[in-house]
Image (tube, rainbow, N blue to C red):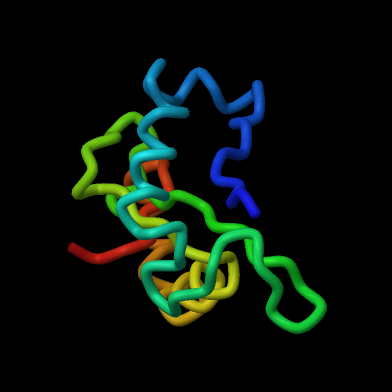
Length: 105
């Protein structure tokens, strides 16, 4: 069975990303073995009744920063958990920078 890896970027978001974004995403998924870098959940598998879908997170919150060390593949549960734990700091950073920063460096 072939593992799916690419999900198209929505047309409204393409202005923020590198022209090579699809290749960059694929490289991130390949480097993390198509698993969440936090919990190890496999992309396109199931967690109970819920489907696992990995997203690529820009660690500094800047979508235009596509350096590999700035990108991390996370499942939605791990992303939501992180955002909840760090909610106040994330909101402060969003307000100060005008962008969303999810992870501390």
